[in-house]
Length: 469
Ligand code: NAD
Image 1 (cartoon, rainbow, N blue to C red):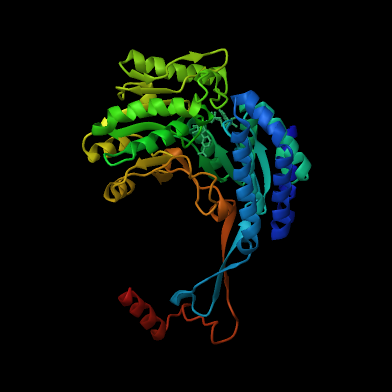
Image 2 (cartoon, helix red, strand yellow; image 1 turned 90 degrees about the horizontal axis):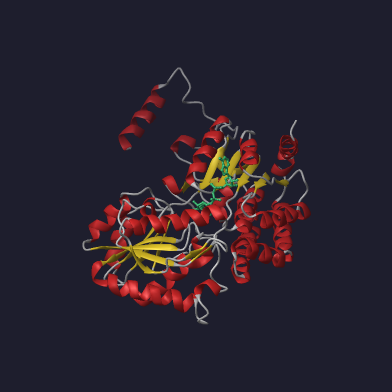
């Protein structure tokens, strides 16, 4: 038997013990993981810097995100694990109805590389809160972070409650062949399909946190200076390797030139404030590896070859995996940059005259993970919110909706994902909402009127109920 299978079986054997664990025990485990993560912050900073050239404070912000979630769970889990009474109906008259959130069993969490600490730990918090054992498969593209994450789990939790599996596609595939009860996956949607198919073999439920092309709509009324600042930040952050990053801007044609001028200025203002050049900025991270560097530079070259104009940026250095924050305009649907998720520091700008055109441009693509609207016109804001679909949406800001407020579920829709993360919704995702009906046995409440042979009284009740409805 392979080691992976043996470790999986150890997790399976702990199912019942964990299902019966108390809210305090679960909270204690989450806090132990959190404390160990905080203890290892310096190591995580170093790993993030080596892998993606990330600034320490950006990794620190990821840890704060985790702490917000851990503390929220600890504060609320006592309520969540209690049976939740629900109202009855005529059909359940006399009975007591409740929902119990019962653990699914063993949860597999397969993570991406762009925010490895949060992607490995946050779903694990929800799984543990739900009383599950958890297997974590970090991305092989962030091996330094993955190693520290393994050490954090090993130190905080016993081996039969959580296991970290290192490796690439082969490890992932072996894990996917095992009968996990729930699979939480973060990554691209090509692999998302593989995960979903593998889950079908064992009827495992899935949470798929995927990506897509998140649009930004800027109408005539927008505060452009404000919008350009936030969009520059949202696109360059983590070198564009953010699932909810703005991917393409659709700006009203009356404001297009002004926006293009402002976004170029804001990229400089945020990321070259000391004038030493963007490539020397401590705030401009790197692409994760050579393959992704080539992929993103390839998107710029393909677009330029097909007629795109470079508003700013456009240079790259393969040796350091640097890509200059780039804005392209004059783009069209023949260009790969408009077809694929960029997941790099490249933004495109298109324009519209009538707002119906915006719906066509967005509706033409699969549902995005996020959608951003910059506008001061409430009627326009409602129009765009109502007539589009995305996992989440933000008005007059971007990238502030994930990991910031556990009261908001986070997830995609259609090709950008299914299921949600965070807070009570994330806890429920890791549980079976078990419906329980208690039948009191006294004769006033335990009536068997609906059993054959049917009486006239039963017939009257049923036929009257139909009329009413
Ligand atoms: P990826 O799909 O390449 O890898 C994700 C995981 O799948 C890794 O653990 C990897 O080992 C595994 N994997 C890769 N190929 C596999 C295969 N053939 N069979 C089985 N497993 C396999 O994703 P990535 O490139 O690491 O991440 C980038 C993507 O993730 C982007 O699309 C981004 O939008 C998305 N993302 C989404 C969220 C979210 O919360 N919605 C967050 C971060 C990233």
